[in-house]
Image 1 (cartoon, one colour):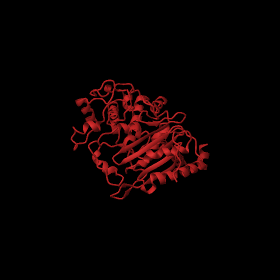
Image 2 (cartoon, rainbow, N blue to C red):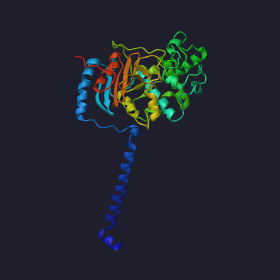
Image 3 (cartoon, rainbow, N blue to C red):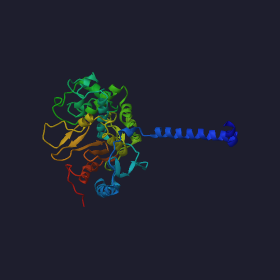
Image 4 (cartoon, rainbow, N blue to C red):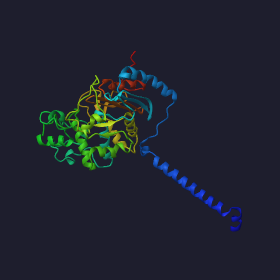
Length: 395
């Protein structure tokens, strides 16, 4: 048999054949490994949505385009805007400048200051730690921040703005050296030192206050053992491949990263409050926020219980349609689908992130030049049935 083999395949041919087999096997292995390595880590956090027909997309674009041109202002709009359905972008525009002085244009990957939309992301980080059993919503804040001077304030109260803790911008203004940037730790130390009166008994009603989320950032740091920017990277940004998102902890570099402008396109100066994060100071893009929105439908990213906690109201002391969940504003009207959103405004940065949970729709408008037009995105809910707003396109 061996003689027959050597007769049919001379030694040189056999060697060539063996090398070919080895190369072939190696090639297959390499391709498999490459495929595994290139497989997105956030695939777990992408629930399966139904596909969209070309006609559906075309019809919605016809509705969205007039909103973009008339309400946001087309050429006047300085920022990024997108509408997505079932995780698919059906309309997207990026317009204007990151830096007017250098004529540097905004791009899809340009991070913009989210202002208070940051609160929605901070709340997600807290809820991921709740799912890991590292935080409980009913825990007293002093469990994590022992020098916090107020008894009976819970993590849930901070998330829902029901703590009664006063706003750091007000109590610090007359006593802080404005030439120095305040930090989250400074906020906590001032509360400990002065024990400013609560605005109201904790847990009795709602009052929006940035201090709540500045304190939540400190809780995240205490639980994770790393600073808030690193913790957010680990808990949210890296798992979701939000590569253009970060928490700014070097306020002196704000204008190098993304200057903000007033409505006359004059640059806005930073102040002593620009070093505080959790309530603000997150930079991101519309596409990164969409990745986050998609992940909120996945039980691998957030448990069903956590999602239920986030998307429900907590303040019903007074009649009305507006409420607040865990880092999420909402409009609730009887016999209508609830409308969930969060707005942002800090210096010239304005924005709105809306998530229509009943239709798996995400709408995002971000601007680094002051404009209230971004808050009008709720007008687009008329494309879908059952929401509280009934607007028609302006002529």
